[in-house]
Length: 280
Image 1 (cartoon, one colour):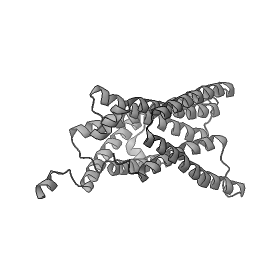
Image 2: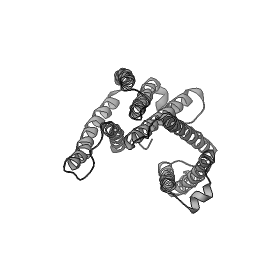
Image 3: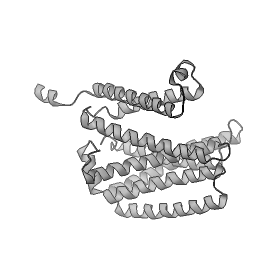
Image 4: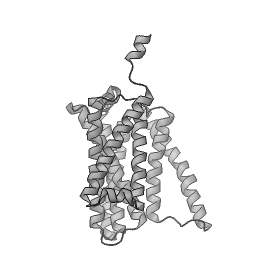
């Protein structure tokens, strides 16, 4: 019994500490490279922090905690470290490229609604890229997926995963396109035409994904829709009520679309967590 216990991976707290340390080193280096790219003095930012640097620091601490918590059941070795570096490097580069392109194209001062929509859209695009990369890796021998059960599931449901990640990417592009329209880059007519094309693609992808899903997948889809409805009713309706009474500012139309998107994905995580499917 003792030997079997010794054969197990490191305890959760040791994995949490190890991956948190890896995340800290990686994100500090990433932030340092980003500040060099922006021609910013990192020591000056540390000594005289601004609101932006303070927010970046808090975001980095949150990311470190998330890395440690989500990897608490995964041992740290060369293979898992390689996968972590590749996935996070791709995610950061893709996210920065999208945000840089959005800010470079903006002709007017971008409002908060447009920025939030663009950041949400960029996050979805990055998730789709990482998901597509993971799906491709199980078919090409890159071994970017550590868990063998997850890898086998991706092999068996490759077409469904492709439809799902493409759907997520298109939804992210829809938010970015609407944000560009609000920033004065796209004309309303061009933005509407692009939105209609993306909505048509989203509809076709949703139909294809539904046909490829098994009974469990369809049940999860129904539960996610129900959960999203109640989240929107409580949070979105609560915001609307407070705005009507004059306690807060009323949400802009683009804010509503962003809220729907965020709550939809929050609902999916809640549903998966309730069925204990996030542990694989």
